Length: 104
Ligand code: SF4
Ligand code: F3S
Image (cartoon, rainbow, N blue to C red; front, side, top):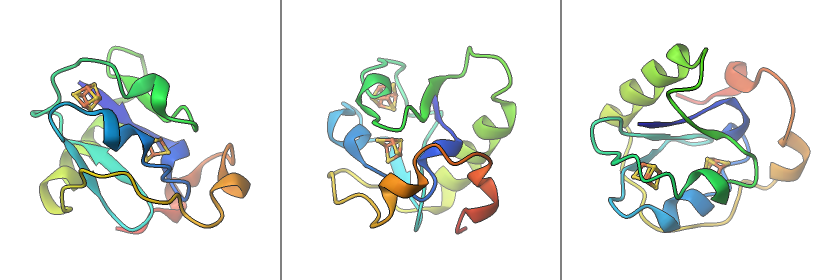
């Protein structure tokens, strides 16, 4: 599966959503996640993210993010259409350790 990681938080560009063939993105207020059981591993979303926040779970060190994606995918609503990025997306792009700002 693919996993959404730190740099999506407070940016949420949503370019990823428009290309997913199985609509497996679920959104919170300032972050979104991939449902690991629905993702078909096609990989097309990864290069679409301007924040480079999407990674394959074969990359090391992503356990925390995989768990987080799985947990929130169960409770957040599905998102299938692209929308505007968050207002301060540019300012937040690249800021380290954004997990503390995640709105559950
Ligand atoms: Fe959707 Fe493919 Fe990305 Fe999985 S890898 S979230 S199926 S676009
Ligand atoms: Fe987030 Fe990148 Fe999608 S910032 S909303 S994972 S395009």
